[in-house]
Structures are given as structure tokens and as C-alpha cells.
Image (tube, rainbow, N blue to C red; front, top):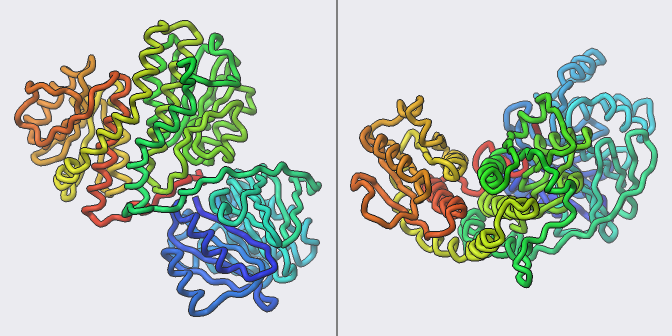
Length: 605
């Protein structure tokens, strides 16, 4: 979750560190800091709050130096304050860290017994003091290696040293770390996005690797201290990745972009001439698949739930949808005829990546559905399906969720077709319908003004409920998650049929209840559930494609989505739920792009 930047240069680096940290703000954070080597000494500056606060500190008291490290912290150990902010420095070492050191309490006791004193509550400070201890008797390579060997858990590290005034060290286990190549300067960063303004040439550390950077040289080492070579990747050029344009915030821009990104994604995978879906390099013959497991976290897990409905309906393959943080600790019985699909916007989600690693160790067939093609999941999975959504900066996922669902729907159709489980006419009809989806999304977005009015019903509510059946159930869960993330209002998404089994007790006079009821085979049942809510005083927002007048006059609002193939209703119902969460948060003056306590790329467990 935290963000790391390190620069070794032949010119002052503090300004570039600040700009890179601003690029990393999307990951979520509560404090910021940097260290440089200035006049032969470690010059550390840090603060609670935003990078802007750190920038003001530097304006009043500049940090010079031609190498340095920077950090934005998302608190794990210790409250968010200046003392616990990174970097953590001794007289000779300064460290920034992303991850969790699981044996930090044991190491802390060991170090205290040796006479070391701790200033912070963090697990990171043990790394600083371990290195300090080893450097008294070992050379640099040995000191780094011995420190890394003592650490249990996950980490990405950036380190500078008082006695080594021209180098920056990076190290990785579990948490991602990229290395960038520049002209008379080199870089480390938590992800390639932070480095894009400085370079498009990137290498990636693997677990156990560390690197030593000077302004004109990069050396890589494995866990056995042996020098190794690394492949250099050239990053794609995203011209509008950090520009809000005329939009108030990134989230409103990204919601609006869905009419474009959905079209790009569909265009990438559908062959217009053959009217077919292009997927290549399957790691397992679709005809031989006996089971599919879909694995993700948060919003990505909801797309996995959605895909389960599609795959089960149009193929004969049994499907499980799994939360990655649970999956990775279960005793899974792997089978060579099973396909494991991992969904992650960033491609760096710690639990999802760990689950993928577990599958790879057991020689299972894996697929990654990601938005960042340079990410860890993309590089490890057997085959990769990008969602082509472009950079998503807002913490609460919008266009990436739509992109994930599009790719999963296409994958469902393609597998069904290759297994001869869908008729040719039906296959072509569904492709045709999908190609019209961007236009339907555009129509839905054009009704944003209706949602602005509806949002006022939510701002003073102590909670809200989202109900749906079948394809609508995962979307109800996603709608509830968006409202929680953005507005800090407690919200729950339930299968509408489960309401009587407990959640009905929460319905009271005035509580907002969102009912997702497209005219599908669940429609009548869902409307019956809606009547039960109305009878108990709930204020209903009905989202439906039904245009008849049979709906109860007691509903508070009705938002009508365009008519489409019933399997595409999920996409269209998602849009008003995103807009609802956005406008409620806007009315409550919440931080839209960076909700409290949350991170875009969840790289700690």
C-alpha cells in the first residue's frame, strides 16, 4: 500500500522525489517523508498528512543532495504521526519500507538487549537498526544480505547510507519494487507508474533480489549474493494518465471514461472481420477444463462473482469464486484440469499475488486479468488478459470493474464456444449485443442529474441496503462497497431472497434501500421483496429496465437503465450505483479520490 521512491543522480533529487510521491498518492497514505545525503549527513524530513505538507517543509528548509529516498505511508504498525512516518534513520542508515515485518517484536527485543533505542512504534525501524548493527562489522553486501535473511514477512525497501554517498539500495520480498534506468540517474519505485515521468525503461526485482544504484550503474543480486542480470521492459505511453482535465476529481473522470474504455476493451478482443473473440495462448485446452476458480479481493472479487453466473449459465463447467485472503490459507487440492483466474486492477494485490504463487508452486494453470501489464501478477500468470482501462487513479474502482467484467464475459463466451456449448447464432448475437454496450453506458451516464437528486436521501442516513437476485446480487454488493468506501455510510449488499433471514430486522422508517430489479427471470420475486421493504418504511430506489406502470407507487425513486441483453444489465446497473456513491460523498465533503484508511494498490496482507 505504501509508496517508495529512490533516486541516485548527479543533481539535486528532492524535487523529483516529491513529484514521484505525488504520483504514488493514489495508493492511499497518512504521512510522507524523504531522506537525502546532504553535506555528508543523512537529512531526514517527514510529516503527517499529505505530500503537500512535506513540500511546504522543503520550501522553507530545502534538502539538497544527489541521492535520496521518499515514502508515503499507510499505517500498519503505529498510529499515523510524524514519528512513525518514514524514513526511519540512524546516524548511518535511512530506510523506507512497504510491507509488514512479521517477526519485528522478536527482533526489537534482540536489538534492545544490544543497547539500541527505538524512536517509533513501527516494524520498519528494526530494519534500520539491524543494518546499523551489521555495518559495524560487515561490508555493504554482507550487511544487506544478513539483514534481509533475518526478516520474516513482506517488504520492499529503499535504503541510503551515510558512508556510501553515491548509492541507493532496493530490496524486495513479497511487495513489488521496480527499477528504472535514466540518463545520469537511476531509480527505484513501488510501481512503474511513479517512475513514468522520469523513464520508460524498467526492470523488476523478484522475491529475494536486491539492487545497488548509482547515477550511472545498476547492479542486481539474488538472495545468494550473486550478481544477476535483469530484463529491461519498455513501458507503454499513457498520455492522459494523470490529467483530470475539466473534471472535479479523478473518480468523476473515470466514471465518465467508461463509455470509451469499454469500447477500447471490446475492440481489442473482438475480431470485426470474423466476428469472433480473440483469445490466444490458453494455458489449458478449454475442452479439458473440469473446474474454474475465480480469485480476487474487494471489487475484483465482485467481478469474480459476476463471472461465476455467466460461466455457469453458458458452460457446463463448475465454478467457485474465492476471496484471495481466504483462498491462500485453505488446503486446496489442485488438479491439472482446473483453471485458476486471478483478477486485480493493479496486478500487485498482495493476497491475490500470494494465491497465484501458491497455484504456480502446485503447477496449476493460471490466468491473470489485470489493468497493469507490467505488474507482478501479469508477469507470473501463465496467460494474461488486460482490461485496457488505462490508469485508474481514484481509489474506489469504477472503470476497472467494468473492464474486468467485460473481459470475464468475453472469456465465458469464448470458452463456451470452444467447448461447443453455445449455438453459433447465440454466440454471434451476444457478441453483437456486447459491441453495443458502450452506447448503452453512454445513455446511462447521460442521466446523472437524476442520481444527484436521489443522493440527498442518503447523506443523513445511518445505513443503507442494496438488494438483488441472480446477476444483480454481485452488483448489489459492489454498490454497497462503493457507498462505504466513498461516503463512510454503513451499507450492505444482500441477495434479495435472504432479506427475510435476518437483514429485514434492519429495515426501519426512512432507511434507504436500493433494489436492483431488471426484467429477468428474478423480476417478480425481487419486486415482492421490494414490497416487504416498503411495508416497513424503507425508502426505495428502484433500478430497473422495466418501463411498465405495474411498479408500486410507494417507491421513492425509479432509475431506468436502457434495455439490453439480460446478461449485460449488470454493466448498466453498475453506473448509477457508482454515481450514487460519488454524489453522496460529494454532498458530505468526503475526499473522493483518496477515501480515508484505504489504498488503491493493497500490497500488504
